[in-house]
Picture 1 (cartoon, rainbow, N blue to C red):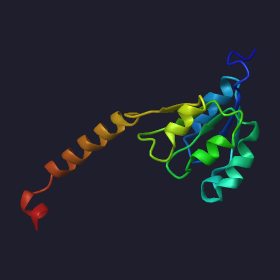
Picture 2 (tube, rainbow, N blue to C red; picture 1 turned 120 degrees about the vertical axis):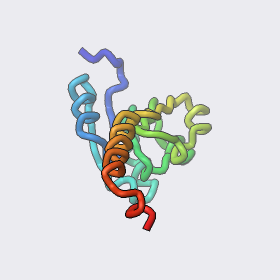
Picture 3 (cartoon, rainbow, N blue to C red; picture 1 turned 90 degrees about the horizontal axis):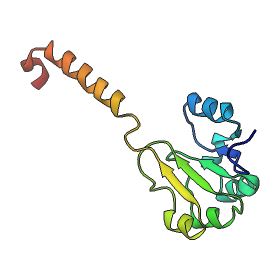
Picture 4 (cartoon, rainbow, N blue to C red; picture 1 turned 90 degrees about the vertical axis):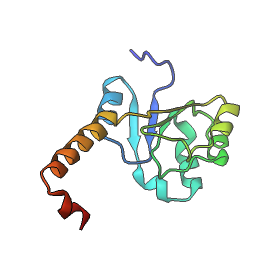
Length: 131
């Protein structure tokens, strides 16, 4: 049973973690992945979005007003990570398309990395670091 109504076709146009894909599939979404779209002319992206409800992008895919206007079924643009600079959020709002991102999604990993660097630096003589 599809609990998301008619919003079930997902296109992923940038590289995302496999857990994202697995979670979408496990929840009944039909997922297509084409990471080459990010580097192709926008017409190719528009062509692929004709029957897509959800677009998932990272930084490489540019979602312009032309892309949004040419995507009649698009209802949601998801951006794993921080920032939506590559998405025309005003055009999305005008067309009733929700834009979501996940700021702070890697906060724990960044903190762990910082702690590891602190430990590594603590083992070095400060004179060695400054030279």
